[in-house]
Figure 1 (cartoon, helix red, strand yellow):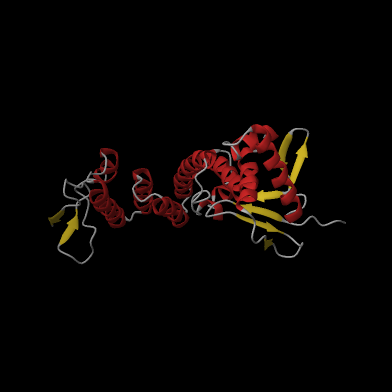
Figure 2 (cartoon, one colour):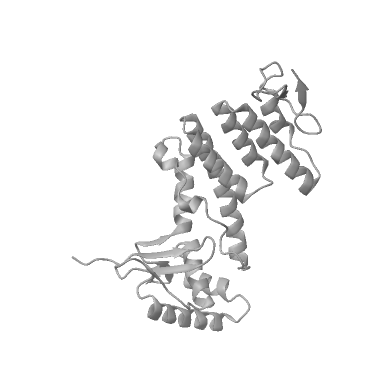
Length: 266
């Protein structure tokens, strides 16, 4: 039985190509940037036509030179990573079995959005907590996909936190919510998710502290206040609830005022 070597392309937090021996995967060192761009383009574009790839990778040269550069890049890639790319007619594609972290991120986001998926499918994988797509690359096709993946990941993290919390797995929900906050510190919907999970746990004080931290960051960075939507999360607790600071003479009001969280005598 022939064992197919494991092959993996990483695009999140930087480019990496790993080939199996089939021993544990080894990274391909010294891969020229032009070859990296070709592999990344095929990872993101699916099964594009040769002309489309040549036009995206070499947009500022005549068409015949762009096609010549593509032929050269494919030849060099075949030498460095045999069988990584398949050529079918006029189309190019990664070979079957090549794993790509961006593909895994997209698949996880689809599972999170599917209400029929099992809870195990919602758990945040490594690709869900990693950084941005190909940092330091400024090709137009990278910038567009980077922004699209950023939104996809943030929405998936927030929705995963909500679904995990509803299932009573608030610890895992907080990990997902804080991963979203870490990635986008000024994103209010991520902070609202953190507050909601704390409230679902019954940790009113933690919810208030999370709100206050966000209010302070927002004031320092943008000079604005949290939205009414976020404020209402805490106002809904009600001002008549018992004090949330044990052993003290004060409690934190559930409804923040313009200056932050009020402290009132009890």
